[in-house]
Amino acid sequence: MNPAVVEVGPQTVRGPNSGPRDWISAAIECIDDRLALLDERPVEVRRLWSDLLDVVAAARGETLVLVVPTWWSTARVELVTDSARGVAAEVVVLQRASMLGAVNSAATVVEFSEEFAVVASPASEIEVLPRGDRDLAAHLGAAAEVLVDVPAGVARPAPALFARLRAAGIPVTHADRRRVVHAVTGVLPQSAPAGAADERSRRRATAVLTGVLLSVAALGGGWAAQGLSGQNRADSPTAVLVEGRVEILVPAQWTVERVTSGPGSARLRVSAPSGDRTALHITQSVGAAPATMADVAESLRRAFESEPAGVFADFDPGGSVGGRPAVTYREVRRDSETDWAVVIDGEVRIAIGCQSAAAHRATIDDVCARAVRSAHVVG
Image 1 (cartoon, helix red, strand yellow):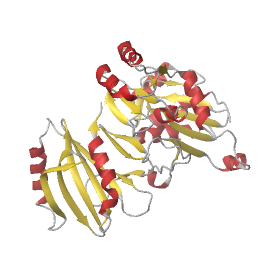
Image 2 (cartoon, helix red, strand yellow):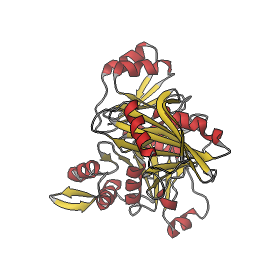
Image 3 (cartoon, helix red, strand yellow):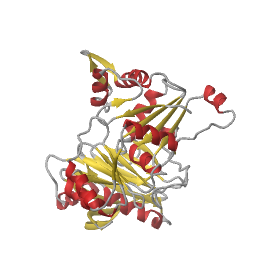
Image 4 (cartoon, rainbow, N blue to C red):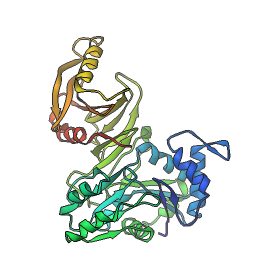
């Protein structure tokens, strides 16, 4: 396999070829929109991404590898993945921190964005921290070694961070384009099974790597994560899910889909692969000013008054989930129960529902606590 490797985002796009700067700027700035302005003309963002990837990939080989920010939302990854399907016979999507960590299992990978740092250490789940040098250096004090990943176009952290780590005896190395390409080679299969070429000619395949390797599900626009390598970075691997302004840790093997029908607000549903009703539900709303827990409790109390008796129960305005203060309550529907925790981060209210079959509520407790504990606003 001799793939074309293209680094996509967060600030630029680079690969075997250089793309037009105005195309790159418009594609990045408008990735969350349907249309972009290019030369003062409206263009469809999906088509712009497809044309851009075609130029940058240089039409080299049957496999195109897209290396994306670990923290990007599923919607962004879906957009660039769908746009790439017309460029190569096979499209593979790799998340930066997980990919770099997979080929250097001893290193703690620190992937920088403009506002925060994604930390992927060998012995724990992915964490997201502010870029503040002193806090970050303290957090990395127990690392055996640190691999710093600053994607192209992202401002480099102050040298003082690396000086503190080296003074503590922690080796520090930096990822560059060559290391990224080497890491891609290290995690991709080196040979295809017999008949794979014929299969590629019949259909276009897409693989997504998160943790180490995930595959994209076509059903309902969801993402099904299936660990294939057996080299998870934690006992219970997680993925960083970014939706709108909110970031949250969810199980890497669970399917993410958008729900816009049925009872309740529009939301993301993150479902367990077991096929039962075990799932997380995530919604968010933005107020005009920072809210208090008392504000949240009162607005929920008023909303419950218009609902049928028995649907909402166990309302607790002073609850706690995962050690975090929350307004909690239970939603009872046919054949399932959902325990909700509503937390606040500034003016953003984040509601996380933990659903399970009525007789198996304990099966989601750990996942629920981790999700609530990790939920916060980014950007």
